[in-house]
View 1 (cartoon, one colour):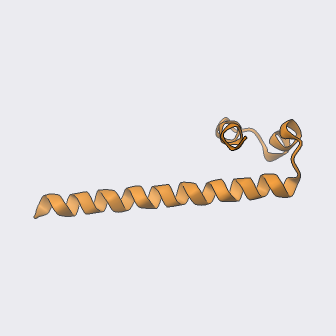
View 2 (cartoon, rainbow, N blue to C red):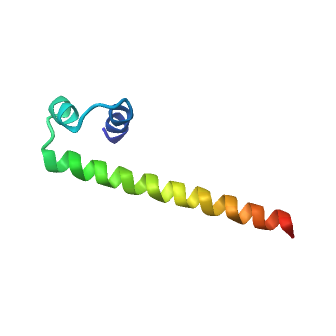
Length: 60
């Protein structure tokens, strides 16, 4: 279900549309949205740190 939610979110569907389609409460959809945003942030930071580390290793 989370994968389908992410796909709908990526296509720009509003939270209300997603909630109606999956019969979820507003709080459930908002919690999913916040959790996915947190994971996105962690992935971006991890990727950034990996790039910085690789650049540092190339200089030595």
